[in-house]
Length: 430
Image 1 (cartoon, helix red, strand yellow):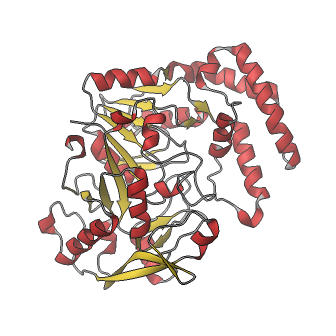
Image 2 (image 1 turned 60 degrees about the vertical axis):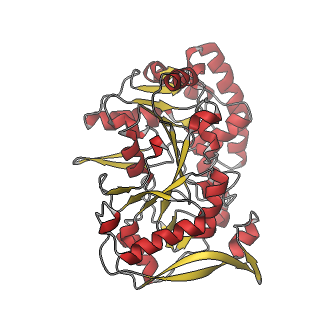
Image 3 (image 1 turned 90 degrees about the vertical axis):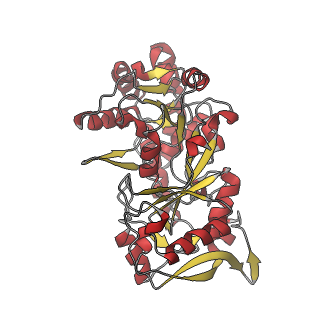
């Protein structure tokens, strides 16, 4: 018996919501360890749909402990709003069922103003942020001027930290031609929300250590995908945190050995939201078909996702950098009915053959994919729950992806329904 970390192996939106929900039903503790409310997971339990952004997926299951780790940046107003939304759907959220790391950094209204002003100033060179203040909040954390949840318990210190914070940010806002933020207004907003949010604060590292020693199963829930990692992704078109499995430990306050099995959620094709390089992107009818069948719109932003063929080079890199032990392959059914399916097996960059995705922003934009073409299948894979339910060509496709990326498929999802899953290997018992 072990713990499991779930990370995305592409650019996010790989279908983590369903897989995490499937796993959270078997876990005792579910932990978010990075990102903010720029993430989005859609869960369907019975006839009820939940769209979660900050809350761990275990929150919708009674008897599970949900944890927001120190590696997350938390907008307290957004968190309370999300708690209210799930409460209206019958989910009870209390300081006993939800623990937020007392040392977590907060996203403030000034961060969102900065996010919008900076993105506008970039003009045609926009990064494509969600505008929720994630990046500026992480910048403040690293610059050691951030405000943490535990600071709310000390009004005098809070006032001092807000003053110092705005000394920096108002100068930047003024330079960008944006309205400055009042120290008193921001301070009063934080004081007003303190009684509602502070009760959730807890020494998360200690709680997780005790849970681990008691033999409880812990699920570490990542957001976004590895190619959006601030170090290993398509920089600068990335998120502001580390999305690799190593951050499951640092972002929740446990030792690396505690993390256990690493499951990489991987879509059977590739999608991306926003700007940035995308070697296998399709601009034809097939790309439109994948988007329509896969309902490819962002959970958080509602933005239409760009679609393309599966990039085995990129996923192989994610497997190695992310320490992925096995893949959960999702949305195989979206490929049903295609006469042929292409898979990227390498890149051509100015006549040079590459078997990895380069770090250079210029090279990332200039590489062209080298494809291997496979036979498609006309039969439906939707709802399949065993290998016997799959057409031979679909099995061949899955097996070929395993060979190309160097990792086994341990879970295969064939529809958004939770039970339409083929279990090859149980991550909790690997």
